[in-house]
Image: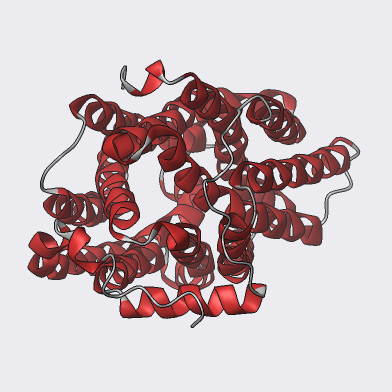
Length: 410
């Protein structure tokens, strides 16, 4: 990691990302809890995540087009500014005790729409600033930022919600985004050597879809991500229900659970960023996915808060393994002109984890949240075993770079 932070531009970029992560982690920590406070319904907790997932899925492909079409840093700043303004509006509503369900759902959509642009933009910008040689370390450094924030913020926000009210969490979200915009404005990047050919946004979207469907490596990774998001991360919308109804906790317990996952992820992220390049990234991804499913299954069987914290921490560590490896393989193996669009399809699949809140919420209402989580965990473990067949080919992405790229005019 020390090699990456010798780059002044990366330091500013990383700092801007840090404040954006504060906003994002705060949102994930409290928004499901707000839905539960407003409705007292496990279904609407899941549905809130589901609506956000729909927003992510719908907006992500267009976010990729914006990233590839315009200056990445400008697109990221605008997205962060929009989320900050939206958080300010919800904070005012919460302070005046005027929050209704549709406000909760609308903010979920706004966060998803801006995140669908910001997430792939930050990843592609990391490679532009750090360079391909340091890409794994750069991605791990970004992941370390999110995971450290993921430890600290829930530990502070959870008790704060219990003591002073949930409205101030949305003030934190707004301040984090506005600060991120200010710091990102200090990053100075050279103009690109060549201007991309300008076509209609729809043509660029079609080109990105065609490229992703024809590219074996992209198809494989996106397919596995789809499974983990649909079945593994369906656990996340149900965490407020698990904490309250199974583990007997409140907002503080929910914050501890998020912090435990982030602590596990942080250890893995710092380790990867210190190691540098790892040769067998395919097997790293396989191990991470199988481990995620395994620890999630054990978590679904736990009825003890301390044990659940440990298990969820190991699940968080596993996710960092497969996400960092997958991001690095993806960016290293695709045409640079397509990176924004390809990574936006990855973000689109992240939206599936939110939409999975619909089925996980329905299952939890009928059979209980633990069974809903356990079923998804088993599916993820099977996906990890299937991916093992392709692990070696994932380590050879260069073979696919030019032979499967569509012509610019296609």
